Image 1: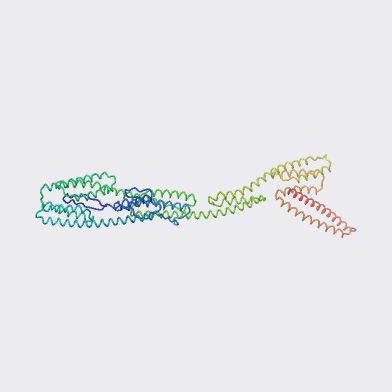
Image 2: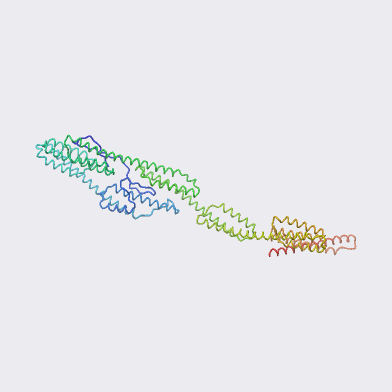
Length: 617
């Protein structure tokens, strides 16, 4: 693109310097990057679907040379933008399903191939048209150089300029028909042409009628061109206005001179109108550069934010989820920002992509480890479920209770499992625990009721024992005492907190009765043993009773063996000696005591057997 600069040249030469407009960034034919919004830089609005863009490009391909390149670039970049949005959606879904950025492979799109084919056709046609245009410019250049040479000959061989005027007008017409030439040659060519045209007019000294007629026609056309240039100031599309101005300048050059006194005025008017458009055009690109720099600043801030994330501090799923929402918000912000300056755009895109790749790599590593930990936690909790289920039917209440409490504590130390398994595995574990404790609580309630009943029975027995008074016959009282003691021993457990107090009360009453009724020590010991059995059942259950019986049986057998030894020894003693009489008496006392102890031991064993039968029932 070029700007036509203001000059102070008069219409005599109508020189117009040409310089290039400031460089501005344009969309490049780069591959779209996932998640990056490709912004348009032309006045053409992007279409909403890739299908619509392809349809328009197919139409353009039929007559590619007649369509502005800006529209083609705009359509192409709009397609890349939609493609990038689609690719970003595919990548996000892939990552959400457990994939990684490195493993992501974009699905092929048949429309991408068609886009390449259509753009190739357009490019070929435009290249061909441009080549033909350059060829035409070169031909026109040669024609115009030839015309200048002929004008030069007319000027130098001007014996009769009036006769040469028709030839001069013919050359002018040929010049106007030749139109465009290479831009680099245009100014110099035009200056030379104007030089010889002016010389011819000066030499020709045509009559005023011819000159005034030409000047009048030229003034009318140049005035129209000035008005057209001035009207462009109201054109909302500055790019279109600028392009139209170039056409007006080309035509202004082709129109011949006006009267000498009007040349400065007409050129000044046209130049002033051109200056307005040129300033707007320059301002447009200045604003565009400023906007692109602002976009670069915003994108740089986004990169810095992501790069500053302390990813090593993200130790929980919630922390990563919160940070992911922040990244998504930055991604949306990035998409809303336009393109950066051309020389920096690729670099900032690469920096952004690298920062995101680092984030997603760390995120994938965390969740990979997290999933493995969840799987390991699931295995541990399954093992605890199996242990709990193995204990739920146990009747070893104390040990099973201790073990289940231990399992529950261990459960709390194990980390989370996946959501799909969490509820089921917890329900399985707690169901086994609840089943056991419900059984235990049910049994405990039943035992508590029974113990209250037993408490009432034993209190009633104590009351009956206390009712045995001195007026009762001694033999009857002793029989009643034995029956009540037997009844006491037959009653089961009482509440633990009442046991010692109640037993002390019972012992006091029975000891007093034994002393008052002068009952044997064996009866008293047997009564005490019956009471002790209750304590054994409270503390150890059936196993304690079994061990106590084994001990008594061994003592019983030992006493029987000892009794046999004493009885054998009695047969060797000589009753006639004094010493023998004394030893015999001692042995007889020991034999009688052993017999009494053996009988007591037998009765104790019988008491244990009776208690065991009652426990089974």
